[in-house]
Image 1 (cartoon, protein in one colour):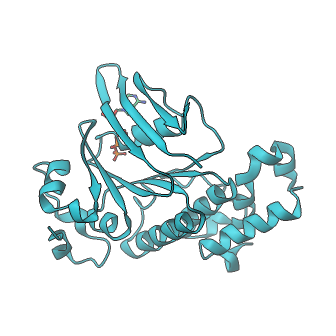
Image 2: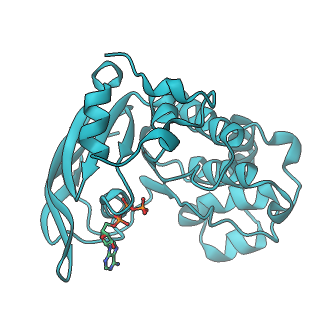
Length: 258
Ligand SMILES: Nc1ncnc2c1ncn2[C@@H]1O[C@H](COP(=O)(O)OP(=O)(O)OP(=O)(O)O)[C@@H](O)[C@H]1O
């Protein structure tokens, strides 16, 4: 496994500067939450880290190698789950090994025993072993997101990227997904980067936090550093009340420990 280095990363889309000279270094095994308002550059950062978006300037290194295209060591869990509704949770999870097994083997489900065991183990990690045969489309949003995590685990990556994995979920399901994501990440020592809107969920599950504002990195620190002042720096003048709902539902949780 290797550390991730984001080195002076700038990304422009025409006139829009989505990321502006962002740099940080993350050792393997850290659970990092990316915070920022809509449009601050969170998705662009994650997409750049998995090689789906190429930098305008700067680079991202995985170990010593620049990331220039998607690679199996880096798995991405998307906001819209991106799983196949007509397939079972098990088949979806199993498809995470497509880069090892090839498309035909995956479609025909001719994977070896070890691979099938891996898929069941991944479903177990996200608490869905009993639902393995259930069609994904008949599962709740939170369960579908957990299937997405299981599929990423079957990929056997070293790095897990999750772009707002709880954006469309109710507070209870959002916490479930975060709990499983954190457990999966710890279980396997994966470096994990997850973008979130809800600050109290972030505080509950995050280890390290990176705050973006207008494409610039305005915060990089650990739980105790994430004070109200730090949150204000990330979110500016906007009313942050709603962002703190989600873990206990108690907006007083915005009174973060200084
Ligand atoms: N493919 C693209 N083409 C043009 N502009 C883009 C593209 N992708 C992102 N942008 C712009 O870059 C900026 C950052 O967008 P990005 O999606 O990274 O923000 P975000 O923080 O993830 O937002 P959200 O929380 O709404 O997902 C925005 O101004 C957005 O409109």
